[in-house]
Length: 429
Image (cartoon, rainbow, N blue to C red; front, side, top):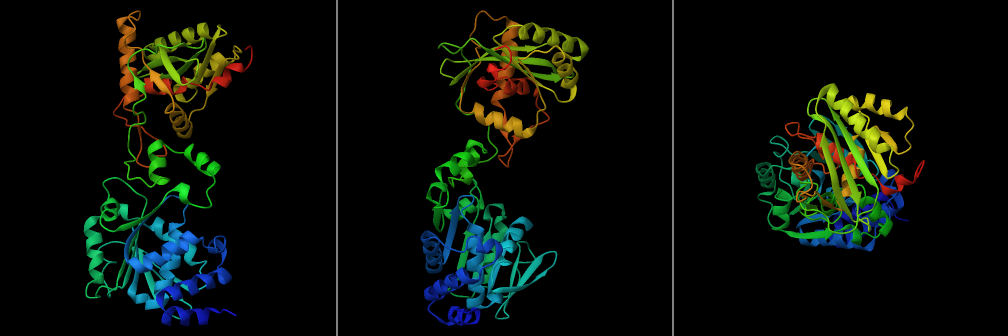
């Protein structure tokens, strides 16, 4: 019968590879809570843990959901038992990373107690060893010499602090481990380290518990760059323009469907705006057919209302109106007239982000070469093209970055305009 005390003895005294396998086998019996839900290690996980033991200085570049924090927490406790807690460090870039670590440590049967303060956390193991994990800063990287250092979320670490942290391994000879793991980011410390040390990369398509449907569902919640970074482990910049290579100044030359979709934005300072689009017959292309700024204040508001009500009388028109802030009185005024092809939408950042992801799959044409448009119409279209071209995701990659120094009124109207085509089937249609 395997016991924790027998396992501790084997971890300390057996060949290091046999010791790791014994430790993992023991976890399958005794793991609790969060660790228990994943207590069976896949073969590739065991293989990578053994390889980290063998290689010593290594980078781990796994996709989101591939359990890098969980697996490294398991390896961290193993090293603490093997060498003693004072020779093993876990240095994280922020308290968020430490919280994730603690979740798994609390489920590890070899951990019996915690001592937590502002900067440093310690854990007491079943064999009475005490080991440290901390946020990396000028204070926590001073201390006794270390055989093993885990660097958690390296891309967020400052290079000088990382270099200083390595100093606590000085004088320990060649038998030391530096284990780096992080989400990839272009031009970051993690990218530099991955170019220096051997890197174990595992993208979403190589993780056994991800189904094809899981991956497709995840893809719908992220920008392209975010997906490439988080799920394909590519070193990409997060803060990037939303539309790359799918915006065209010219007009679409193919056949367009008859329905026109309008989006609105009510901005008393920059103007009440409406943008209209039509889809190509195959649904892959969007033509901007109209971009209007009716002016500011009450005059602009009334002009926009009149325009929308005239368009809503047509059976080939659909309007999605932003019903936030200054747009709410307009939405109320039009809704009481009973137009079935009108939607007053309470817009939020999630809605906007999701619509942009949908628009990334389309080819969008602005018609700046249309000789039938007036110079004023072309001027508004040029402003629209400029605003849409500059649209960016924020650094998180999960929402749109709204720079207050830029004009947004045409952008918002444009994002509302390409409503899903299946909405045209409602009401009188």
